[in-house]
Image 1: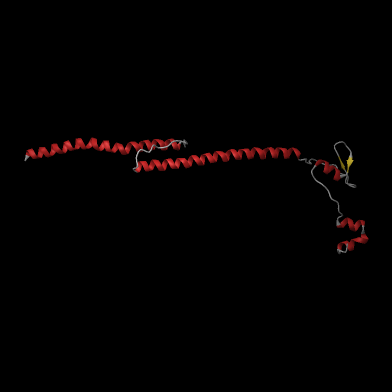
Image 2: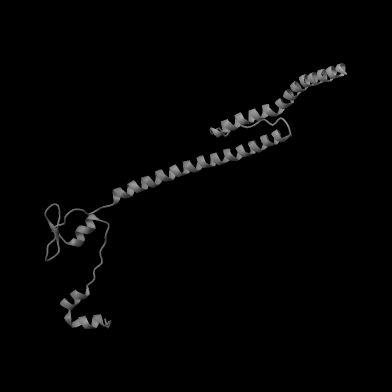
Length: 170
């Protein structure tokens, strides 16, 4: 009985000694591709969209590799499209900036104090000459004028027509 016990123990030890390397060898078929995949994923995380996983089998690791490669293809396409849009945007910004600078150089502005006659409303220019307000503003801005008469001036200048104008008869 003791011999049988030793035979069983010896068989168990021999089986463990044989099974352990076989298990490790079989496990390496799973672990090694996963470790390569993790390494590739880390490179992709750093922004390298050109990397791809090598497809060595049709098992789950192979399917993962195929999906990863398709994902990276789409990511690369999106990155290229984004680069193109960025270039287009930079071109448009440069163009608009040039147009804005050109428009700014064309704009005439009025600023500061303008000496104006309290009676005739002429403006004294930088040379000391008195000019009509319309002429001065037209020369120093893009404004154009049209003339009309306000109701107060119609009443003052044309009292006989005031009532008719205000009633809409004229």
